[in-house]
Length: 281
Image (cartoon, rainbow, N blue to C red; front, side, top):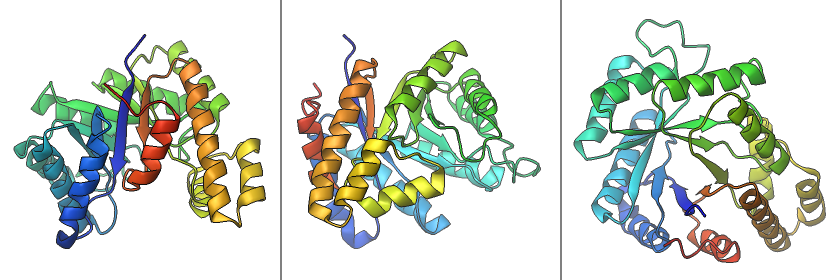
């Protein structure tokens, strides 16, 4: 039986004044022996980079887990991205989650990377041993022209040196199973960590669904309809739904779970305990 891979996503430090509280969150998350903790990118561009860098530095100094940075390509110039990559390397960061690299809106610019796989090549050229994770979309990327195009891009990322796939949020177990089967049929064999967002906030679930084309299965829709106006009951029913989702994924043979919302350590602790994932030794 394969060992479970447990990881968390946390937000960047919001201000210097909150460093101690973030250290406490890191301490709480590390008590679960995560294989890695990823730090997201959010907010104002330059400020977000600095805050992400500081969080990665804290994780590196802690030494109990592997820090991974979200590396958003977007419309940034090649030099800016290369300089940032070298800055991360200078503090010892070796794991990168490359995202937002396949937009058709910036692929024609001469001063930008045309796609994510060209940037993966740059990372591997700098150091072949650096670890690159890429995004997978069980319900297809919202900007992809087709499922076929989406899978083709994912396979190219594998061919250019990606080491792991971390999925976008997906609440539909059938969609995940079908996508995993499609990956296998297209000879995509990278290890997959399924992103899990504990269902605790109705508005966030709806916002993510509308913004990213994430479907809401019938069972989850019933929970929203029945408990949506009662935050406490919604959280209880939502966590039960999350546990059922994890159990179903385990039966599919999934052994990698990437928990989003890592800043909410109490909810993460509750979910891990109920899903029998709290002792990741």
